[in-house]
Length: 320
Image (cartoon, rainbow, N blue to C red; front, side, top):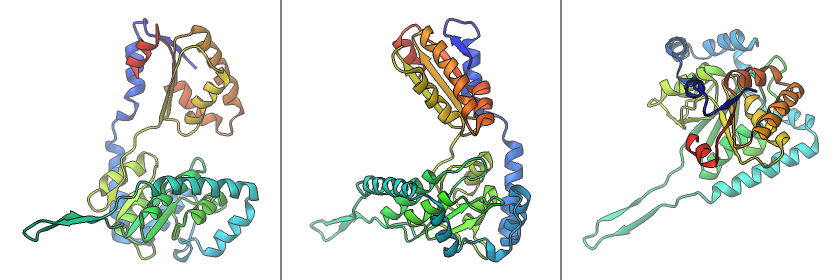
């Protein structure tokens, strides 16, 4: 992991390149996504099946797009009881938190009989996108489906790309625990199109939430207005400010936890200690070799990772 000093002449240029990494020309991506959106809008399931085979290498029939209940039950049986308990505990805590966010309807009458107020009504259908191409994210299922259910959403529809071995059992288990109503085997921009327009099998929803790659993010941006979305997310990142104290191995683990998500992720440490900078750099080099996704983490760290040695904490805070 490269170490930089704020006094270096090239420092500002180097940091600008990292910060602006998500601002690359997206015209080509948008062109591809627009074509997929239009194809799915016109051809429905036929297009979904075509893109699932093309991008995920999985050939499905129309009736196989939806995950059946028996498939979910089989997934639950594959997971160790202790892991299920962990998912259930996480779900319970997420629900407890989001229940406290609920806003109630209210109204009052003025002297002339005018009634004013605020009416809170849950969305009818919400679609959640769960990535599945590079890693497994049961936490994404819980963090998107449970708030919707807590708010009273009547139907939660999940889409996630399949692999040749099906959908990961942990993702299916998380969906069952979170109360997801329907699950469909599709990912990418085509899945966003299906949720926005509806197909013969996949229902049109009122809002789409959940993270994804640049194609998913672009698709969400383009269908906004036809359907509501949560946000258009950019590349992931983590920034740690350190005063020279602490355990280098833990700091390195935090940096790598973000780097292993995506090659475009950025992991940055700002420290006031040259000794800490060196120690963390060595730990990152050691720990990344132990990761299952070490190639992804290495690409992220090498391209967009940085350890910055600042003069003091005030300077570190100014760079935040």
